[in-house]
Length: 276
Length: 343
Image (cartoon, rainbow over all chains, first blue to last red; front, side):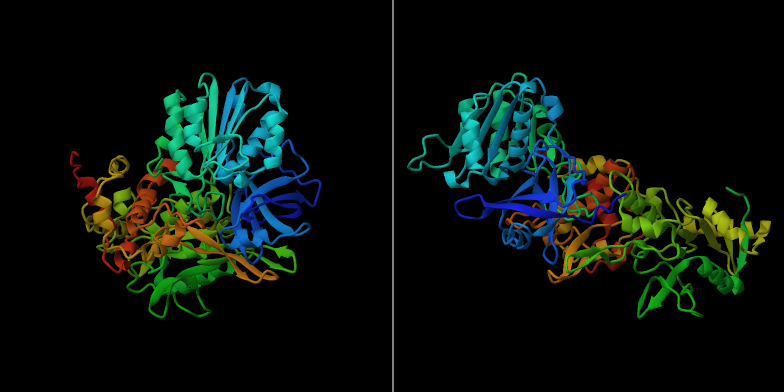
């Protein structure tokens, strides 16, 4: 059995500044050895590390259908993320994973999927969207509601433009306040969700974003008629081991790293420590 | 297991320990400065078994060192290794601590991921558990259906009968180990003496508090003021966690530069504010209230949910070691007796 604490070396193949304030960067990494088997599903995460700096967890932003690279978007906020921001193409970093569970895509087949995201939490939602698009005929309507404070903080803007051109995605982009040149929606994600009012019948909702967005979006979905069992969200907690041993990321009896990060709202309601 | 019980004269203890140390990397209670803990005996050294109630520090450190190297790196090359020396034997572990090791086996070795560092030290290890003739006033192992002569999880069980130990193999490993010795069988009288010691020890225990309904109570009291009251004097010093035979939380840290260094793990505790402090500024457990509640919930609720057993063995170290006399037994009693006021 492989030692789960030892990272696999991966090469940074592409670095891109993601946001207009440069606090977000997107990294594509690839395995040195072609034989490296890395099977994962959207929603899972990895621990990225730089020797001497440490490790931090990041959701995988690429889909398993994109076989050439693994993608991560990193918000520069602490020691590790700052070190990651200094990376250049060709640098080697450590990767542990895939860790955690994934979105229950099997259950989505033949049904409608509503994806709701906010800010830089859109990473694993990108993975999910790309995966669904790659298997488009297996799912019915796909609705995406994605908001950020301002246009320059929306992730993956080139791709969003491409998605808009596709005829088979209902994409709604929104920003918090009006900005010159922005011709799409203005308003917070919960409000926009209420306006769009996705039909709950035969539908699943996946919500990812800052805690405050999740807090106000979940009641909207319940009001629209989505049962808690059909609403999924992905949680974040401070993590170290990523394999359920070091004891810090629990919410009630569940470890976010091991039992999550993806939970249904019904599961969360049963956990004592969850403050939704 | 074999019905056979042997007898080890204390005069022959040294020889027995020597025999063990030939096959095993032997750890036993020994005093360093003022503190009793499990360590390796120097050649010719003696275990500290006189007036021995229990070690100040739990034996978990033998299998889960306070500081451990996960990997080392230099110039892009990463190296790692796990324990490869002789199998480990622990002599003189108290039954509560043996149970603590068994619980940590479940944490570290069960489930989707196996911890290779714990596993490497535990593999083929031998536990020689020593019954407690004189439990302390802080002992409450009997709350958890353990007790001063509980044999669960041990390989060899010893009872101190004065000039000798009764030695009982409790596992295949234990049987095999004893087969290599020339210990004689215990007599019926020896067994009677041991039985009397056990009876006396068990009757000396404080009143047992019924805790089967504790988990439900804890969940029901999640929001109550009780936690504020209980945690008021907690200093968040984490002495309880460091002294606990089942606390297993750890941190992973870097030591060195980007060129050369080690990635290590060190014991950590949910009592520390930084334990759950996120880089973005949020902290789900900002005050002692949330942290103490987490520790109690983990031991008496989450452990049950995940492993079907309590995560406390009643060793009482946290009671003896707490600088502000926060007694976990009193917390349990408070939870049991708390009356929810209607709002």
